[in-house]
Length: 333
DNA sequence: TCTCCTCGAGATCT
DNA sequence: CTCGAGGAGA
Image (cartoon, rainbow, N blue to C red; front, side, top):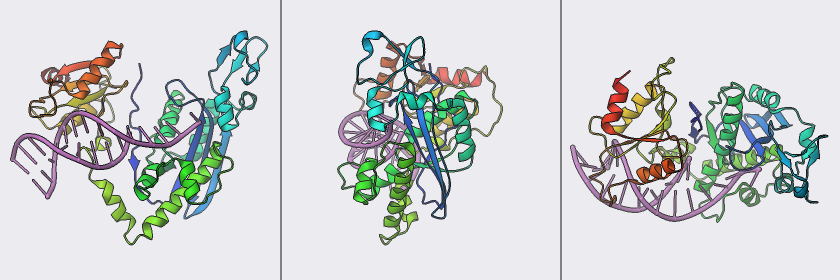
């Protein structure tokens, strides 16, 4: 069971003059199972670098290999008892980071604590598909008692809008388009430098296009669903931690009878729950409103409900509630 | 037109 | 996750 990322910062579109570019390398793509192996952050102020942090990370967990798994191309360590592996050969190939390098690195608690100290709690983070990095960092910082709340600018999001004709919008593609050298790709510090150059070039391009960056921002402003889920936060600081909705991720489907969805989401937040708008493995409750009006739903079940039912079959910690049960829950405070 | 809600398709991070 | 397209209702 996982806990939702409470109070995680939100994705914003901004042309900042003060920010921190971040990048991490990890043992894989899945923040539930993989670990951070390198972190980097570079501060910029008014177009000038104002500090740099870059360090390898020794993960808190590793694989133990059996004798028969010791292939020539596999990079492993022998600690006197077991053959251990932080990273597999794919990651070593991709990043150039070896098990030997990680063995000599500081523990993740120390590095991440220093990293957060460098970045600060009020800075705005900039990165490429930076939600990936923020999720890993949120989870690993949370383990050492730090909550990462910084808002972040995803350069990839801007790149897609500025260069819609490009076939791909990977960091390396944008680097190529702008003629930015990318020799040390997939080392965190290098990727920060490259990401920053792409960010600056994109901003230049927007400002030179005849309209302002504010105009550019407006093309995002009308939120897609009508509800900006991240803007729903609780004004309270203390919660009843025994309330059934406390710490739970809640999703609504359909139209509620008694109140607009936005109001219901606000109530969830005020009870210490986490308002969410899509069903994932992290979802704890799905509240069913009325879907009668919606012709696209043929068999009476929304896609959210179907997804939730599938997750429940797989043993997820998720309950489907009727609207009235939801009202009972919020009134039993 | 604006608000609130839906589905489906398509990328990127290591 | 993000975005585009579209229904329903006021």
